[in-house]
Length: 282
Ligand SMILES: Nc1ncnc2c1ncn2[C@@H]1O[C@H](COP(=O)(O)OP(=O)(O)OP(=O)(O)O)[C@@H](O)[C@H]1O
Image (cartoon, rainbow, N blue to C red; front, side):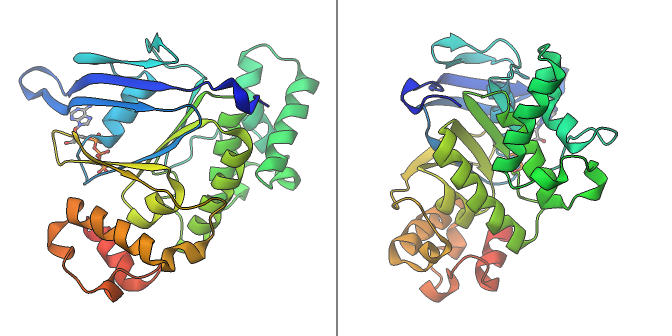
């Protein structure tokens, strides 16, 4: 496990623009974005559908080259995908024909690590995500939340400097989602890798992040940075605090001005129905 004092995983994005599409259909999906993320920081990207969040994450992953500007991690320009920047998506990408333990150990296999060592390390990671008893199962035998736990273990086994998460809990039911958020915070408290996490869900962003970067509609730019200074460790009672409601109202003002004037009780705790409806409205 990485020494917490090592301070790796600093992201610097400088005047970044990203074009997508081909030929006459090409357009700027992300425009003139500059930001830095400190080593070990947890940042959420929040923005309306189609504003370029996944495109920006794709550039951080190294799947997409900048049309202007650049991105560095620890001072080195990104020039393609690398295991040091691990990706977790909404839908799992596990190999259905491999057992859970072999899915988690796959990255190590590619690096030439021997079988017993990679099984030992995979089991260690599976224990961290609470799945040590499912090592010999196949992905199809797991629930959605369990598959996402395997995904996270599969990324963490590479000791990434940065973990890039694109709505990883978006397909889960509310209860499982809350459990996964809590698990992610526990893991992050141990490993302190830098996390860039995309979500549509304001409550989720406020619960998880040190800082929320709010994006404008297409072309995506950063329109505001919101510092989320709740003490850690956090638990679900946080969402009932006045400070939480204040920050939530600010996010709503930025993302969905029409809802920002609603009475405070409509901006209610995580999981409450009106709040959920507001989240879907973004
Ligand atoms: N390869 C591509 N070719 C053409 N258009 C693309 C491509 N990738 C993304 N786009 C377009 O770029 C814009 C930004 O897409 P992106 O997926 O980054 O948005 P997003 O903010 O992640 O959206 P959502 O929250 O709905 O997932 C959208 O209009 C999308 O249709």
